[in-house]
Length: 223
Image 1 (cartoon, rainbow, N blue to C red):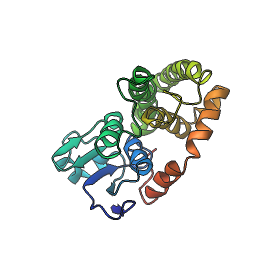
Image 2 (image 1 turned 60 degrees about the vertical axis):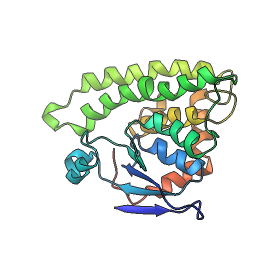
Image 3 (image 1 turned 90 degrees about the vertical axis):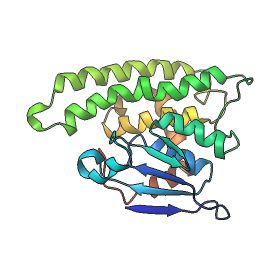
């Protein structure tokens, strides 16, 4: 399924994003909406390597997301945020190397994926994706606890600032907030610290977040 979005109607579409509802590809989708870029959104069932076999012709890994912009092909969601910001968005979602908060920004981009999202993928796999006989409740519980423990880092940041880095909204907030979106889908959000729950509420009320959710509305449920 393909959807076209023309937020910048003067410029032709050059960016194509393959996306599953509420999967990691939500990060670049949200970034596209924040930057008001035109894009072609290709909606797939999750996981596409099993349910959309033709997708393997585009991405042999079978993973989501895939972003194509001319000769550029990317498969890492956090990197896509920085790419879109710097290549097409005048750096609006980025922090410059000579600016305060640059290190925190880069850390936030990766923290959202490597520290917060990774353990949740094990929860997802062993509670929902594996056949019933292969599910591992203990593994899922252990990694859910791992994720919740890793929120302490975010809690410490948010006690000092309203954002993940640089005291303003950046791509780091997109990366981190996606991990909270996934946690809500996995019903882990009841254990959010108060400051993290407040952060989620603020980030999820951004107009571009709502537009990204609307853009994926015709996609089959991912989790």
